[in-house]
Image 1: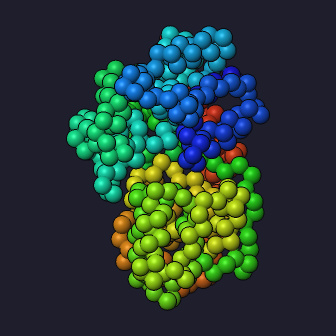
Image 2: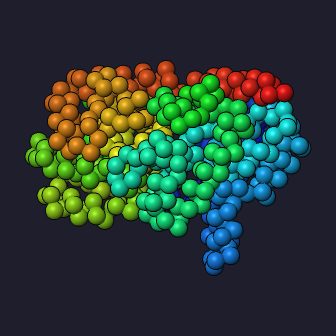
Length: 405
């Protein structure tokens, strides 16, 4: 099979799970098929210096429709004649226009839906720290424009809102994409409710290639860990409040990661008297982060937003670490309460503390959940299982393309 992969890499200053998924999937396919790529990098925007009104205007218009990338992908399709055009992230430099490059050809089109950017200007269905689906429910971008949902800016929200409205009006997602890869059943159902063609929505979670074997439970440290971006949407402030409520009985907690909320969270921890209990470990290289995770007895994920598929959960399962997570969206799809971890009410520090404390008080149960997490990984999140699902989805996309004639 001949596969053309397209991806806009996020800026190098911010580690991206989507970039990692693209690289993993490219390597997975390259060993078995003929693969070419079309890649752009958001760092190009800074290097090009989109300063000034004219440059900013051009950049904003390209978010909705980039004719140069449409032509570039069309040339690649003409030269390579791929069976599949598989797009990962199209924002901001590719744009959804790349799907029109395959129009009138035999190349089937696939989009991996890493987030909710097709329907939400903020991409994570979050506003003011709370889940928000107004734009989906109303089939309108007016709420996003009114609230300035992208980075809290009305001006910055405008090109994203225009992109969503334009491609809804054009029917891009209904007519130009032959198969969507959703990361969880929750995401599939959310997009179906937003008007995406249900028969084209397929579920394939992210995978973890070649993980290390889980560390024996008896050799692990008696601690919990949060590993991820320190942003408001991740709910780490709720986690700190829960640990403060728990008091002296709480286990040590590592917080590994970087983000805009780090300084505020460190102050919050100090003010709550958690300095000796909570350690901020800063940003870690992937291998160091995995070592920290492998040596813990619980990963806590107090997210406030509808995650696409948190890669850290996949990693925890691979390493046999149970997960305590918000009973919200994708996390509730991935973590089975009482089997591979525990779920708590999102944003509720008291419920988080009560649920985690009950699990922590029963070490044998916690160890059993870790073992169940590893079994789930082996059944659902290996490279081989992901490849099987991907081939099934590609087959469905090719079938849909042939029906179009």
